[in-house]
Image (cartoon, rainbow, N blue to C red; front, side, top):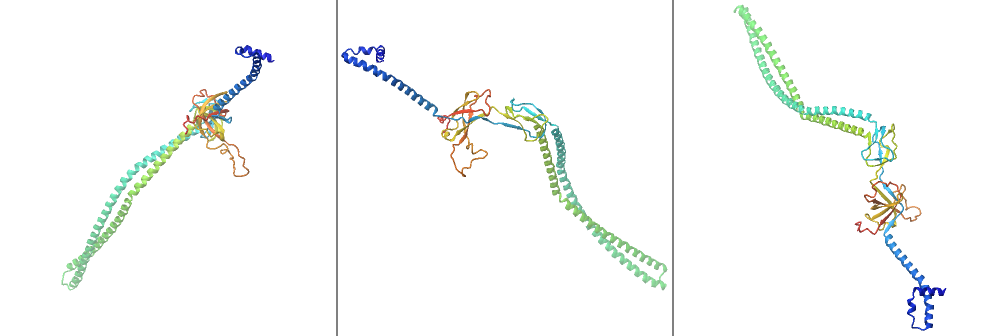
Length: 433
């Protein structure tokens, strides 16, 4: 075996033998015996050293590449799921879409029977027309009332003045009548005295019978004049009382006319109330129009129809969910990293998102870190202040946004499993201090 190795060495390295011509034969034989043995042990050592160097370089490269990345397998595609529900009650007459159908915003999804809401709209429109007419009439009554009250006030003031003038005139007529009564009574007294005096004379036949008769007639006329004067005085007294009554009536009318500003304010209040009622009726018309429009259930966003439960003939209530729409234009990845992995994770850092369903990676970036761990927002959050405590590494959701243009065909779906990797060494590129 040693001879074969020596021969191989000489064949491969013939120049070594030529360099050994000067030493003696024994030295040459010793050298030849030593050289094959040295090569025998140095070749595996060189190979091992090379492999070790390669492995060390690979390890250093791998550390350099992968030490700056944080990854997890607890991640999935996430997105909003828009529930579609009815805003009014009624029977569904038509459903125009089915599960997994792509629809655009504004597409009619279902139709509720609109007849009841059409009747309600027409009724509210009729009520609005009536209330608007009432409001218009109330508005007209305000200036009319203002003019009427002004004229009534002026008329009442004039009536008061006339009544007072009438009282003054009646009182003067009463005074004159009373004076006439006094005069008539004085004339009557004189006439009666004349009758008494002439009667004595006629009895003595000192005067003629005719004179006596004339005196009696004059006394009778004086008595009648007294009665007339007293009647006139009584009439004048009644006129004074009547004028006083007219004055009281005019004063009452004047007080009523002075309430004109209050009457104007009352009419203004009626007009405002009528206007408010008309506005209420208008709002009812608008609500009826909205309810009629709500019978057409439309898609609020672009997306795929899912979980359709609406069927023709079904009676639905407000708020009852009929289907859902999954918008595929706004998807992200929710990655639940361990809290020990978030030391260097910052918003804006690039990420690679490997989707199991398609076996390919998508580019993305860190958008935000949740405000708490997943357990904090669970239905029954842990209460570590009671019982025995065992420290458990928590997970915090991190939202990774898929870069625009990475899913042009909308292949991604919420719930798909993802294995994200975040480049935590690129914080400077993300603009994080």
